[in-house]
Image (cartoon, rainbow, N blue to C red; front, side, top):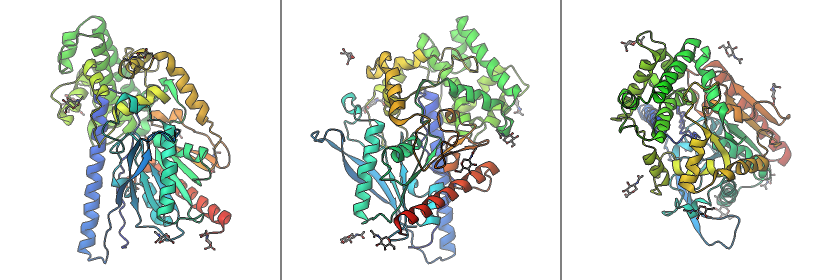
Length: 510
Ligand SMILES: *[C@@H]1O[C@H](CO)[C@@H](O)[C@H](O)[C@H]1NC(C)=O
Ligand SMILES: *[C@@H]1O[C@H](CO)[C@@H](O)[C@H](O)[C@H]1NC(C)=O
Ligand SMILES: *[C@@H]1O[C@H](CO)[C@@H](O)[C@H](O)[C@H]1NC(C)=O
Ligand SMILES: *[C@@H]1O[C@H](CO)[C@@H](O)[C@H](O)[C@H]1NC(C)=O
Ligand SMILES: *[C@@H]1O[C@H](CO)[C@@H](O)[C@H](O)[C@H]1NC(C)=O
Ligand SMILES: *[C@@H]1O[C@H](CO)[C@@H](O)[C@H](O)[C@H]1NC(C)=O
Ligand SMILES: *[C@@H]1O[C@H](CO)[C@@H](O)[C@H](O)[C@H]1NC(C)=O
């Protein structure tokens, strides 16, 4: 196999969000598409260079295949199964004793880029690792045609997901005749970051160590902290925030709330290009959620590709001295809709519920129905705006979000606190008492407050990166990366190297 290096700038990230609103979905799709386009551009560039240089190399694309999994790992008598997708990249593997890097999938479809692009791929090249990636059950193509029916969704949980990793590990071990000399290290970001830490925590005999990026390991029903960090990040000069920006955003949303209070529905519908009249109270909640989503997304992703996609870009618009903050919010909304090629803003709560109820399969993108089910059943994570620090509308209440659980899945509000408490009890929340786990977070990212931010012990350590957002460390290195991110990747790399050395001492192997 040739020495073709695929150092793609971006990786197909899996970005957890309980936000069900239309705009957040559009934002997320946009980010995924941007990353895909950039990745493909970089691959073609790289391949073109190789052809020009007549490099003696053949590029073997990753193996894509499926493994048959039991639908229910906890009832061996249940005969039902489903096919789970995985990818393997053997390109860098130092046969037969090199390590295995397991990339864990989450709440959206994976692709071959999960074994071709990202910091874990750079490290696989350095350490001669076999790269394997497993798509999460019920997302992407990893489910049966009737998989999204309510009665099947009950087989979607983090516990079943971890058990899928157990059988996948066994499958790979058999396929490649692996021995104790092949050290397994797992990687994941966002929800899969939690799974990476939990795989090491619950199955220490199966995986030697874990890098857990932007992992919200503490489940929380009312996730007030999300919008608290959004407000702080809009104030943070490191990413282009300012007091002026923070104040303008607060003022704009306060004007929206006053108009709602004054029953100026027609004006609101017109100013924000609502697809339909705002007749129901629940449609108003959608409207303010959609408007807030652009700011939440800009902080979470901080993508500089478009002006509304980053903190600096949004703050530039919001602090423009032309017009009132409310008018600048209209400008943000217009720019967003234009970029998304959306003719109008979809504020229908009824349509949103229909979409969450739909069992139509889509083998790409984020599984919004599935992820919302997991929030209702395990994690909560509802990004409310009832706290005084929140800059957006007070209409974004916990009640408005958990209502969706009962309306869509018939899961009652009474069950939720206990479900969340069980998750924290089961995994240890942000004090997981694992070993050989490195928790990595960015301090701009709203999710970091639910993760492990301080060293727990010598072998369970934490790294908080100044000025970066969700899962930034997982992307491939890029010349424009800020210094704290460069340093963080160096430290992650060194930690992985130390683990591999330690493993060698323990097994006496490679
Ligand atoms: C694994 O071992 C079996 C039996 O020894 C052998 O036939 C097979 O080729 C080996 N597979 C790999 C991938 O090395
Ligand atoms: C400020 O807003 C006006 C009117 O929307 C626009 O023409 C101008 O380009 C903006 N200035 C900056 C610096 O964005
Ligand atoms: C689901 O698929 C059916 C049949 O193709 C279609 O009529 C319906 O609009 C789809 N629903 C959603 C929410 O996409
Ligand atoms: C919803 O749940 C309740 C109690 O768990 C049950 O009695 C009811 O039949 C369920 N409704 C539907 C539509 O499934
Ligand atoms: C956390 O642990 C790492 C080593 O695992 C060490 O380099 C770092 O200085 C520690 N940080 C703090 C704040 O103690
Ligand atoms: C982050 O870096 C900036 C300089 O870019 C510095 O002013 C700030 O104090 C740092 N923040 C923390 C929490 O270390
Ligand atoms: C592991 O590697 C060591 C050193 O190369 C070798 O002696 C040993 O047989 C290997 N163990 C297995 C199970 O292959």
